[in-house]
Length: 196
Image 1 (tube, rainbow, N blue to C red):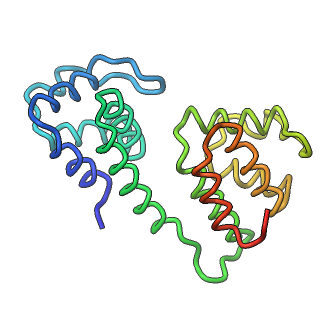
Image 2 (cartoon, rainbow, N blue to C red):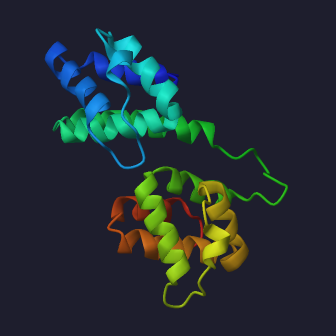
């Protein structure tokens, strides 16, 4: 199974030399929310491997995947972006698999919700958390203090504490549909054993 740097390397190999230069130009110049540009001096005459190394160093593996997806989409390389996202998702699904009889307060629902939230980018995660704070009809809201700077794991913990397993899945489905993340909502509904 490919690790993130190998996955990124494989993705960049599909770009022509000219497309690679455009990709690198985006890394050094375009202001993307949540990412500072990589200094040009660090990307002088880089090959694909150097580019991947700099991205992972600058943004950590998850951030490197996220910025690669954004830049590929800006370059209209949608098929390549989809393939990267699919391959990366498959890698994460294998990584976040609950052990049989998961214990210590971690249920299969935790893993299911965590896998689902892993598919959201940073901005979408913030939007999702904002919906939890604002409140959804039929559910109490979660206080802003409980979700401030919360990562995906903390967000899932807060939802399960507030709404129990089934309620956490239900509110996740409602919010995902509000956010037009219908495919993600359908996947979650399919995987959740109880009918919600």
